[in-house]
Amino acid sequence: MSDTSDPPLMAACVARYGSPLYVYDAQAVRDAFCRFRAAFPYQPTECHYAIVCNKNAYLVRLLQALDAGIHANTPGDAYAALAIGVPADRIVYSGTNLTRPDFDYLIANGIRLNLDSLDQLRDLARQGGAREAGLRLLIDDEDRPNRIGVTPAELEAAVGIARNGSLRLTGLHMYSGTNTLRASRFLAGLDRLIAASARLPDLEYVDLGGGFGVAYRHGQPPLDLQRIGAEVTLRMEALSAERGRRVRLLLEPGRTVVAAAGTLLVTVVSVKERGGRRYVGVDSTVGNIVVESVYHPFHRIEAVAPRGGDLDIPTDVCGNTTHSRDFLARSSRLPTLHPGDLLALRDVGAYGYAMSSHFLNRPRPAEVVVDGGETYLTTRRETFDDLLATRVSD
Ligand SMILES: Cc1ncc(COP(=O)(O)O)c(C=O)c1O
Image (cartoon, rainbow, N blue to C red):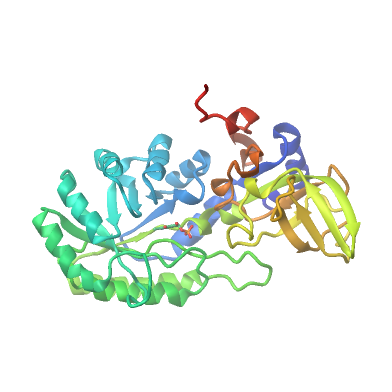
């Protein structure tokens, strides 16, 4: 049984740290990362955890201990990683629309850059200070509207810009889109990327990005990571043989590493039944969590210590505001519930706390990590003062 499925431990966490509460199972993160990493036997492979989905310092450190680097989507991601103690040479930035101060910050800190437009490549060349860069490639049909990356046809111009700016173009990056559950999407993207890479004489790495999906619903077929890993290895071996040198493989998994390790514990406040439906009000809100109405993943919800089987009545779990979309779960099946009971919203380790906000003015929950039976408070609960922390006083 995982630590976050242990009812007395979960009740003890809430008694000690309050409710609502994010709880992460450290061992579940280790297991998910090792499973992911083992699926890619190709050497050399560098695995950069995408800190955008959860910047919890305890989890980042445990991933570092497993030899993970960090993927930064923004300069703020890089800042968070550096503040946790990740060395700059273990951070890879792959993002978009950097301003001059953004470039200054990333270059001053020696962070490797994957850029996503010719304009950004020109900016980097003008900036000086960097000697190499990678480019994000559009892996979809370039005749359709799409804001992402550079097209294969733009690569020749990119090589010219880099040459004139004394830069080497050493990498090509792709991103399949978050929560992708089809192995074929990654493989087709990689095929396009490898074909396009023929235009880059200085190619040193191929970055497969992130987007590895999670099966949030019962019975949903999981992403076939073994197949992706095996097929990617074959393609990378062929590319390396063709180039006469080992081309590095970079990976940027986020969600798949931490989603299942996170639970949001909430407490029932009131229960109503009417019109053939049950409405269970809890002490949390969509502002504390990302739910289907705001971002696509659906989350399973369960009673932490059920008194019996699920009742035959559709149950909506409602947040503690009257916002019309403030539902943590809709049409769930749950057992008898009374005020004071604990519910567990599962698989919220990725894009959960990270996407929580001050919308609706409910302070954010605390975060704790459970590791080897011990609990560690990693983020304190916010107060009303935090809601006004950036206000300039009159
Ligand atoms: C370039 C890039 N890599 C990796 C990730 C992580 O994605 P995921 O959590 O879907 O694996 C993101 C997410 O925004 C991204 O933009």
